[in-house]
Image (cartoon, rainbow over all chains, first blue to last red; front, side, top):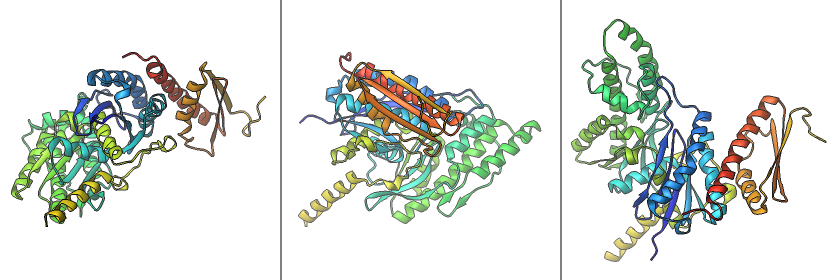
Length: 352
Length: 91
């Protein structure tokens, strides 16, 4: 039987990526390009969209060439419908619609958060973990239950990655390869822990107050030589990661699950992985995490998730191939997981 | 002759694709996204003779400028995609 192949497009934030995958999760190609702003500056929708406009078509060529396939080999075209920034999302949507009409291939609209989860599951082999999804735009604790990925806890204001990125701007750290990576490296040299607000509210977390506090005190403390930038990075990481571990542990207790999967851009932070691994081992569970190739936004994760949906009969008509800035994880019916659990139940009945 | 409801702030453009099929592809791809502020900007697209025409009218010049320039960007992207991956693509 011919293997099914999907071409996926991701462009919801400052990365534009195009990936080619097969249904078993094999990644044939996954090129991406990141819009890197000067130190002290964040990325804005309009400039980010311009960056994507320039890079998307060369990336399609490079993805097809590396995978060594032609358009005829493709079964479906997948793109990020949301959540994310409007203008950058539109770039992928437009290219996918045109290619769908040119090549006569079906379109699959994919939820970005669900794509992170599915990519993490297929790469690590985690079957049914509690998922911590942490990135520059999202912070959620998620578990699968009754047909959907349910959100057990989330940030009530800004994402943890946004908090780290914006603090990196205060210190004017480089945004290359990412502000979070540079905070992580600097934090390794930190020696003194500075007390910061700790904001866990039930199952939810809040980062905006911590950011305001550290933004205000950092300048003062650095001026008076009370601490170093490294101490501040170290203290910020320890505080926000402890909060994330706490709500993840509570979700595990609730779901009676021992395994944790970390996905999203902040998920490649090794200190976060270390803290989570300690917590998991204390509960007799395992931590599943991936490196920057899969953690950080990429086209393959969109292609793979879209292909899962397509293989279970779903597709998006052209007129519905819109994009949206808000698209919650639990709005998606995870039809491919329902099918799998039905199959497992069937097997169990037979064995009885 | 312009029959705009909002008299001054209107603008037209016409792109000749020289192919009914390509003009229709761009039309279909761009028609999916509605104007973000329909009470402030109206967009009307038509295809004929391999040409795509777009007519814009807005309540204020700044809305017209924002919509029109965003439209030019995505129209250019759609056109480039056809040039690159349409019939006779390399590979």
